[in-house]
Length: 150
Image (cartoon, rainbow, N blue to C red; front, side, top):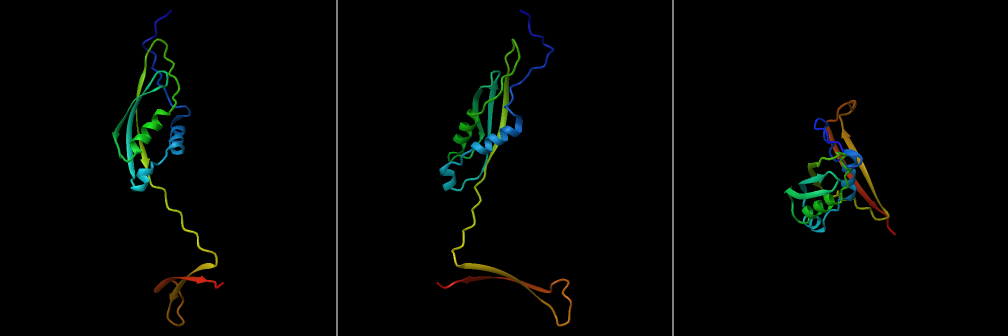
């Protein structure tokens, strides 16, 4: 059996599909904790972890956290990552990774209007008599809600 050559560069384990696939995995599998939603917590959790030569996740630790269940969700998510093996015969490798994962509250959906209600928006511009309207002197916007009887 030959000894490994020292002049060959080490191959590090990488996420299957690259960085775009990693971002996509995080975006689709991140679950906003109920406690954080109730308390309207937003922010970024920074996590560090190691990946061994076989692609296994080791030593997950939170560098800066938010609490309210967000840190535990990041740890759960990182432990579910699957990295490719690094092919370095006769050499052990360990890769150190850091990620920042953002927690942003979902945007509120606009409330649907009840049936029979119609909203019309008008934009009025006033000008002097016989004056061409190029730039509005005074401008006002109105919203009128019309409800049908019935």
